[in-house]
Amino acid sequence: MLITALLISLAASSDPITFSEHLIFDQFSYPYGIAAGDFDGDGDLDISSADCKTNDSLYWFENDGAGRFTQHFVQKNDPERLERHALGDINGDGHLDIVIVKNLRGHLLWFENSGTPRDGKLWKRHVITTELPGAYDVTLADIDRDGDLDVAASSWILGNQFAWFENDGSPDDGTWTNFIRYGATTSSIPAANSLNSMPTVFRVSSSPTLCASSSFAFRIFPFCIAMYLLGFLVARTSRILLSKLWIFLL
Image 1 (cartoon, rainbow, N blue to C red):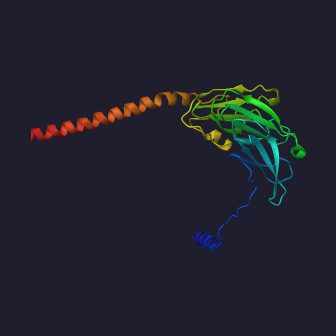
Image 2: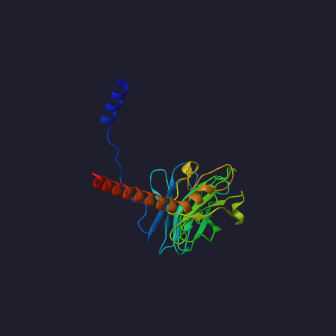
Image 3: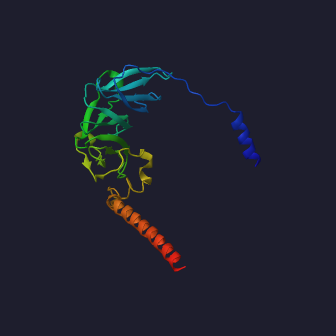
């Protein structure tokens, strides 16, 4: 009780947390997607963001350690919606790469960080797939537990599907195995650290497959709802008829 009262007292007397706004960049045509990571390995957090309409580019902003940022290009002139993206070391070279969806084209790409991202060169562009219609969201995790990062992605109304792509340890060669896809009712996907706890949509098991019961659940769900409503109507109708019969008998 004493400890609780002390903690409440300290919390009440602490100054509230406040934030100040700082301008990083103001020349976007359509900013879409943002992430933070140490791209240049200098110990502070840099920022990445896509510019998905007129500028059709992907940027990273170098943090000088004091919250001042310098713009660098990851990619230029890549039309039709570079959008949401995730950061991770895809090829195991110790540098933070970028995996991104290209919405209208239905592409899933990754851009390779050479380790010298400040050199002014565009990052090497790799294609994971060009067959994810309406590509919408992406996250990274070692889904098959083989020590490298795989890619999980979703698509919206054009595809309505989830998919995951296996990184076989040589992602530079352009060959990614696409495991199970199935119809989806949402286009957002969970953060990488929650993939192991997904009960229906993404359940990671000892084998590199998605939970088979999930697909079955999507198919049988409308039937279950229909049966529930039918049972409800039958029960309600029966109660009404029984009450009228009881009144008649009385």
